[in-house]
Amino acid sequence: MSEGLDPRMLLRGYAAGIFPMADSRGAGDIFWVEPRSRAIIPLDDFHLSRSLAKRIRSGKFRVTRDQAFHAVLLACADREETWINQVIERATLGLHAVGHAHSIECWREGELVGGLYGVKLGRAFFGESMFSRATDASKVALAWLVARLKAGGFTLLDCQFITPHLERYVELLSGALSSTVAGGALSVGADSLATGASPADSLPPPDFAALDALLESAGAAGAAGPEGQFIAQLLGHTS
Image (cartoon, rainbow, N blue to C red; front, side):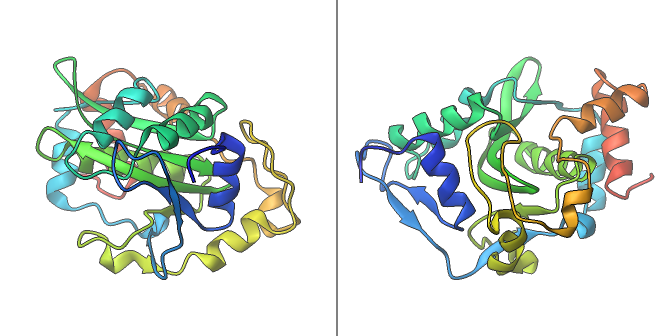
């Protein structure tokens, strides 16, 4: 398949529990993948190691959201073997334009040194890819993502494939998606997913930007060290 992968089709794929891949950066075709097992990070039980908490509190990296989405995507694709071709790139940029795809960036001395991006659907976030050009940069980005999802009322972080770093978080995805897409009509737009009734309907809508307000109210916004202290505390580390 090489034509017709628009943002709406891409979002419908995620709603069905599948996602597109390509054989290489230069490949013209894509194919859809449905892993038999999925790697899921439980947001409430995310384990922040003592060493990573120390790194986050140090303020070594300035961490942002959605300030360099395309640059993060291109950095993730810039490797010898990649599944991100130009077809997927264009469709994902379309999702970002309407608020259904987001990035986390790590900066050091003004240089983009790490980050990740993914797709938002209801209360689920699908981590697509990450990169690192400095020690622990992608780990810091992941911790910030978890903090942002917790603050924003999300319930699921799906990392798609099992990797050596995520084996202990494995669960099947099918049950987690059922309440998110059951009986609903899908349209591409920020927070435009209409679903069937579920217990989550009484909750405020998920908000990827909610962490920003928390940082502001805590007086930590804009300073890497205080922001890092806040994130470590939010993820369970108080010292």
